[in-house]
Length: 81
Image 1 (cartoon, rainbow, N blue to C red):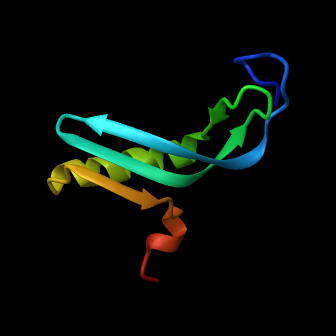
Image 2: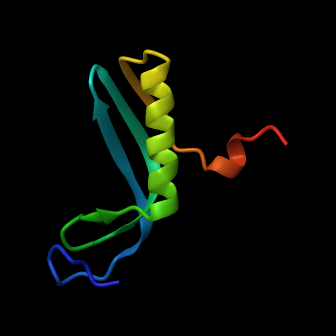
Image 3: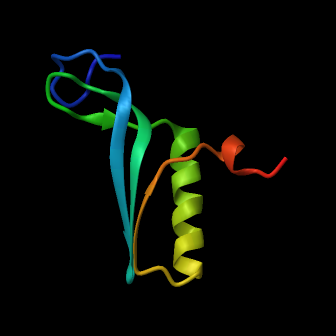
């Protein structure tokens, strides 16, 4: 897709780091799959991954995490089946 930020680059598959802050909780998630613009570095995370990240952040808030850094793990890899 064309980058909506710079309008010059065509995004390619890659990864990004997402930082989520809510109240006293800061959650940094590395290696999140995203489309990344090679021209300006803007990244785009799809809706499914965004929902997973928000659910992970909600869990962190509920368990009292203050600061945590982790690598992204897709939901299908987190189940015990």
